[in-house]
Image (cartoon, rainbow, N blue to C red):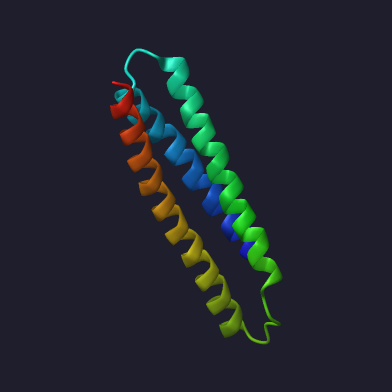
Length: 105
């Protein structure tokens, strides 16, 4: 269950960030659509690698689950952690991309 929920969450958020992020990057680097697409692709690949890697690593740290309450608690904690990581990475990337583009101009 955890892998299904996590995979769906990672893929859905990744697709949304890719679609809307392309508009943001194109606003920062006007006129160079190919460069914008490459930046957006690199961000998407990094996003998938970090989040899928975290999801797989967390599987090794799980103790035995004996009840439905423990399962729900465990899945909720792991999913909430991934959502927090996504938020931090999103703002971190926005900060550095904006800073990088301002230095180029």
